[in-house]
Image 1 (cartoon, rainbow, N blue to C red):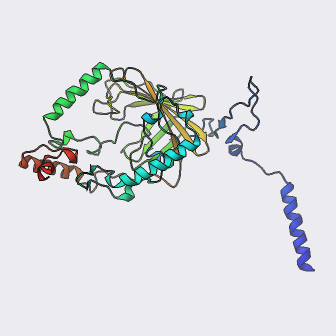
Image 2 (tube, rainbow, N blue to C red):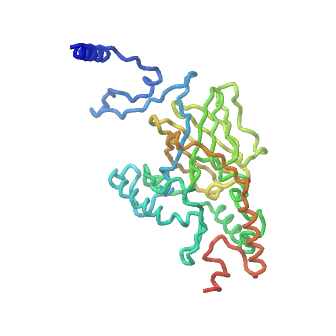
Image 3 (tube, rainbow, N blue to C red):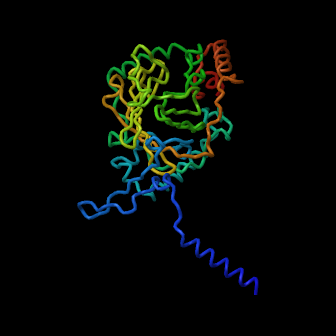
Length: 366
């Protein structure tokens, strides 16, 4: 009987707790979608807008540890097979089929992630565990959103001439004649200009916020962008064009719930898809879900492309993918070995090449 009484008391307590309204934190109230959207003029419900939680001083919270590992394998531009389609035209079923095909391709190409030659059976590989993902579940079929055809605009005549001149100069040199023939990444300076783009590994980022600054860290580079926010105590105009850096000069401003980061004054050695010192980036960071931030970047360089263009990339908050130290120089013999291999090619009377298929000594062995 005592057991029955205790059981009845327990049930009563559970029922009482169920009737008590649960307190909801202000952050939880803010990080919700609109429950009852007002109808539009056509009578259809309006699109629900995600409401991000706010930081104590009122800015939307876009901070956190992020990864783009699930976007690995997504082509930058629209593939020819989708000619005439927009990103929003691709159905979930089509995207699922695309993802399955891409996963198969990633697995087949994993051994050659660092380069090599299928013809000669040579994999200039990296350890498979370096690869962030071989089973990425991409969220979209491609990234370029403007122009509408999903393709980067044509190069200007100036850019074509510049590329032709550079290619002509390269033909006179091997790819390892000097350390200056190697990329800034090979030389452990920077991986690329500061975009939220990823390679086959090291696809982690971190965003930190204060009232006056936003800081963005990238796993595969050696510095943090500390960006002053317009209208705050730390605000400043862009530096003079005389002061140029590999990462450019960035300032930020809030436009509604989007943080807009404007970056100019890159060094000539900086490079993004063929653009250099005249590159201008405008990045919009918008929290679109509890674990998602959309980064929409408009790229402009009238010395390189015939018009500005835009791509949009989702980054996923994931504390399981924190930034690891990228100690590029420490214990790294890559550059020394590249140059010593170049000297070995010199002794053979051939030019060093980044392409294994183009290595003259291998062709001679056939």
